[in-house]
Image: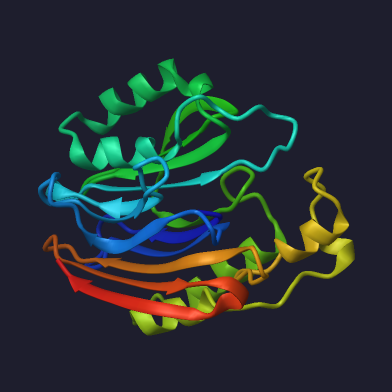
Length: 248
């Protein structure tokens, strides 16, 4: 997952609104959003290569999502980052206990940004500075750096989300996630991957022959605990592969 923008409004009748793109190589085998039969109440896509996921919801209002941190100089972790999401969604630990456990072994993973929450609270953890941060009410975004790092696509996506908060609809959230416009050269970050790759990765929606946005997710959580979760799946060059629309 390479872009997540979200509004956390714990006292609102829609306390959590999420729009997120998962970017990955098209060849990596994946299952779309669905209920996990071995984990009661868990709804998420599934990475078939390592078994985890990038964004999902679980019982008792659980929510989790992650992005990687782009750093070509950091070695790959020996454990899959996707298990950080799936283990929280399918587990019973409190947020605080779970994050304390993750902090103790964060160096076993590649760089990551992790969001975990429930009906009452939402936390953020960055592997580069593994101190859990409880989020106050607000509008946030994370891509492949830290929380609210002002990359052009993150600023654009947060602004688009803000405009929708009076009446958020999954269709509009998915539309903001499908923006293919790349950033001007002068505004690109330098993450060590070269100008051509920085340009490709600078758009909200990424499309190429081998790598791009695999899934766009829109999640609306209501105060009564109900959730509307929609996912669009994509293949090479951004070709649309399917849609899942769940009310949970």
